[in-house]
Amino acid sequence: MQTAPTGSANKRIRRSPEAARAEIIRAAETALAELSFNELTVDVLMQRTGMTRSSFYHYFSGLDELLAGLLEGFERDIVASVDPWLSAGDTADYRQATLDSLTNMLRAFREHARLVDAVNQAASGNPRVYQRWQTRVIGAFIEKTTRFIEKQVARGLSRVDDPARTANALIRMNSAVAHDNLTGTNPDAPEAVARVLAGIWNSVIYGHVD
Image 1 (cartoon, rainbow, N blue to C red):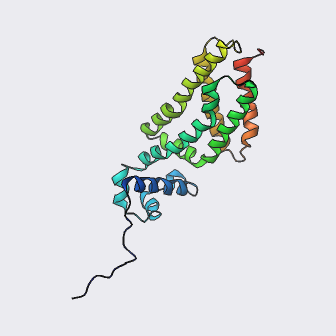
Image 2 (spheres, rainbow, N blue to C red; image 1 turned 90 degrees about the horizontal axis):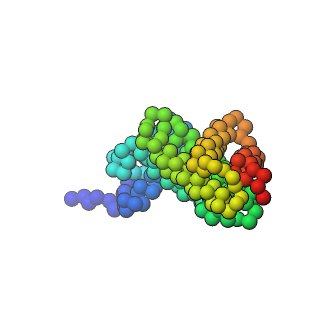
Image 3 (cartoon, helix red, strand yellow; image 1 turned 90 degrees about the vertical axis):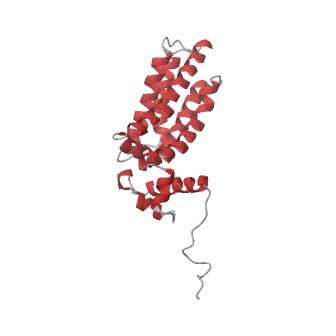
């Protein structure tokens, strides 16, 4: 009787559920650097992992749910880029802090440019992806910016009389400008766009108060 060969090249790699899910997400990040979201398929994605098509559906119901998982990394980077500034709100050189933080935010957008584009492609037909973006990114920063403006008012640095609506306008402006710049033919450098946005933020929040 012949025995099955050992060390077969087709032997599957054993992965923990957490490692397998993370590997699929990493493969998607790599794929989106080369393909648009509309060009990405489960088969193309799983060829990059060496796992089976059925393995994908063990962790994700579809590509839209995978995209929601991809957003986790983008959310972390965006939070890290501006959260220290918004949470503190007591920097001595507060106008420069606006510029520095918005520059960091736009750099994070550029780093995740293909993911931002994928979110916009998917969001048009998937309420779940759109809702996650609106709640976890846009909504969260509107709330943080509202608290930030309230702190500046309390410090006597701002005369804004409606922090919530002001924050809503500023955050949605940031999102629209960042997206339009990324999808343009010749995107401007984050530093150039940040100077314009920071000028608007500082004018709206601080005006001529010093």
